[in-house]
Every structure is written in structure tokens, then in C-alpha cells.
Length: 110
Image 1: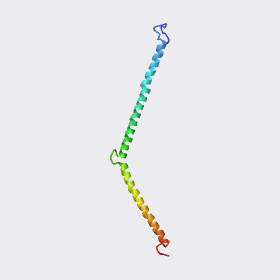
Image 2 (image 1 turned 60 degrees about the vertical axis):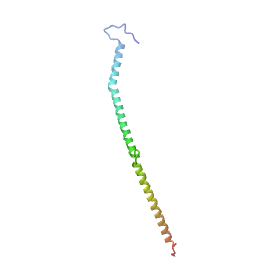
Image 3 (image 1 turned 45 degrees about the horizontal axis):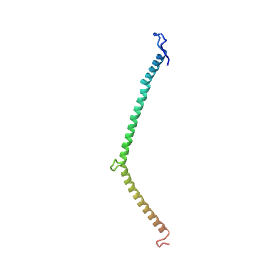
């Protein structure tokens, strides 16, 4: 550290002026850029919280939140459609077999 004892009192010590300048620059940084950064982080956190809440609400809406929800409705409807599909498929397969046997004379034709 530089000792300022030998300087004339009317002339400021160069170390003090440099320190003051650094402090002034730091305060300017703190007052402008740091606050801007802090505001941006705060805004990001608020937006992130809003997205998380929206996802939680959608998740509870889909799962039903302990009660029959959309997923249970979809599962029951899918089960009904699967049963109908297999019933129609079985009927079509039986009709195809019947038509094949009929066309080949299985029922006493030629």
C-alpha cells in the first residue's frame, strides 16, 4: 500500500482518488447493471413459478386429483372401443369363412 504522508495536503493522495474512482464505478454498476440483472432473475422466477403451477393444474386435471378424471374416462372409452373392434373383427372373420365355404361348394353345391 502506498503511504500518502509525503504529499501536500491540498493535493489529494493518488491512492485515495483511485479508490474513490473504483468505488464510484462499483456504485454505478450496482445501481444500474446489478439491479437490471436482479430484476431479470426475479421476472424469470415468477414466470417459472407460473409455468410450474400450470403444469401441476394440468396434471391434476388429467389424473383426476383423487377422483375419476379424464384419464379414467379415456381408459373406459378405449376399453369399450377395443371390445367393439374385436366383436366386429370376429363377425367379419366368420362372414369371410362362410363366404369362402359357400364359394367352394362346401354346403353341398357342385
